Length: 163
Image 1: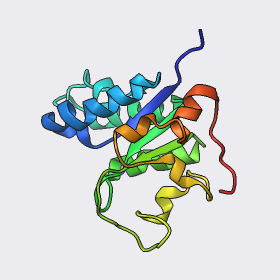
Image 2: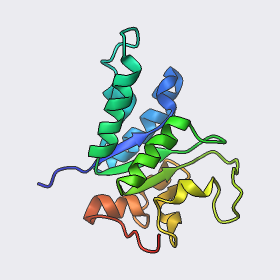
Image 3: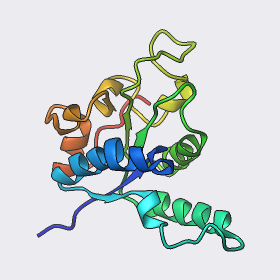
């Protein structure tokens, strides 16, 4: 049996108990249902005591290691602009050439570009043509076999042509 692919789930939901129990739990469940081993940073760093000296550095370094070591990267990019921590993690994933998948169920448009709903730099980790296959706007859409995440989880790296 092949090992599950690891998927780092960059998100701002862990700061709120209500969001952890709602949208974050739903995202993790949807990704795990596809066979991914989800690396959710708030759960993975829960043992670090925020009252201890150096806690913020420890969490930052743990997240950096996880982004580097994960097979793929799934980011929640809600907000105008999206969460700055998620954006830093996205930059690392792009630099390390991870397969990147973006989730936004926020209907606001935040862009200077007519081609993209967010700042154009958010899309630099996606193919120039067909980037929409890596873009998810609902929990239900995550399981769409015609989109890039299901293809990547089932048979390998998604196409990254024409970047």
